[in-house]
Length: 179
Image 1: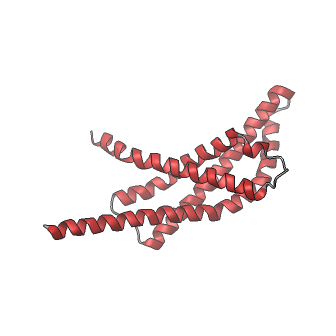
Image 2: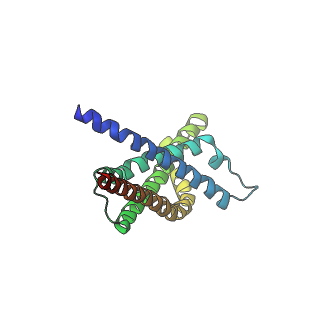
Image 3: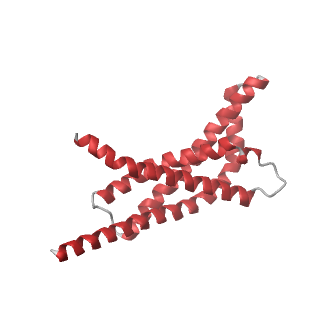
């Protein structure tokens, strides 16, 4: 009974974090494409709906997983002060972005290699490694640009929780003063 209540209480924040992570990573991808792929260059891979969906879903998963402990601290009333809160959220956001991109690179490498293996008869394992090296080479640029972006969305997340905490404390004081 108690476990069910706890699970339901965490479902909404987890879902919202998934949406937040998915949206922020999709926006990062679109911004990166706009900055790094001039008009006239081949953008077939980065404009593919599967690429966009993959980055968004992975971003949502990793953000929800890594930022949920901070929401738990907030719900328990144990949020640290502003600076430690920002540092914790930003560090976890950077990890979420790094995991999102690296996981996407691995999945895209394996997917591309197996697709080519079926049509052209190449070795899927060797092809995966070859594709990963190629994707990782260009992906390091995205990772380098993604980390400051992660600090920004981690900071925004932390400040949002601090504002909610301040508002809740103010409402509690006002209710106590009315009694």
